[in-house]
Image (tube, rainbow, N blue to C red):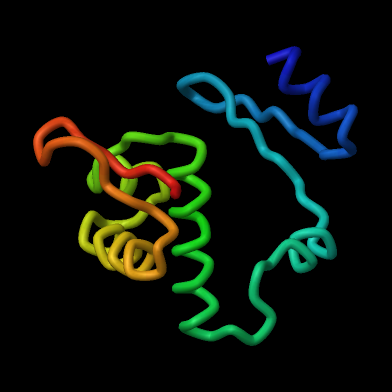
Length: 110
């Protein structure tokens, strides 16, 4: 807990610990101006969300090579079906490829 507190403090993140019945609750306060600046799409609508998802999948595959579709979906917090759609788009664009057998293979960035 001390490391979390120290790290937050050194990065200017306000943190609060509140006791509850079963332990304690940690609350991180975030500056809304920063949160809005970090939003990846200004007026992207649906396409902004999809492109953001595809970009996060590409980054996940780059950082975790050899993962299967279900693992990738869990890793980026989307359903397996959504991960399959993103993977198809990236495969069609030539950005990722599947290597190995169906049973033991996985996706890699080209």
